[in-house]
Length: 113
Image 1 (cartoon, rainbow, N blue to C red):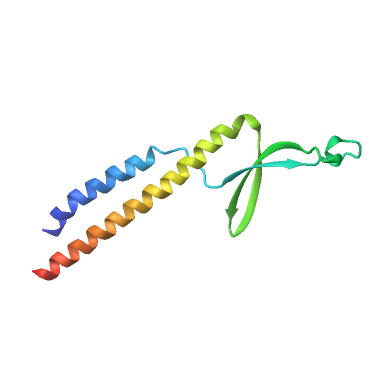
Image 2 (cartoon, rainbow, N blue to C red):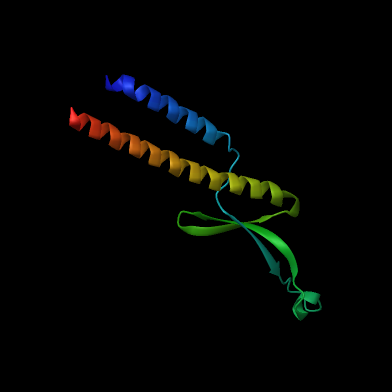
């Protein structure tokens, strides 16, 4: 009897996961534009006019911050992927809260019997 009752819940969870999969490709991290100096002694950047913005992707890996230079032509693509990841996190949290409420409701109903 419990298996029958959980089937619609399972079906609903599958639908949610399929919706989440539509957010691919996704990437965790932050895209940061930075102005930099090149180090050449006669360059304009030594007088305060820095080069940039140059874009870098920052992320955490095994507790350490990592970074990677991102070519200007890839910035908009990367922004979309980071936005997809953030949307994924929001949707997943929402799905997990719903599942927890459903579980609590099921436990309460079983206690009443």
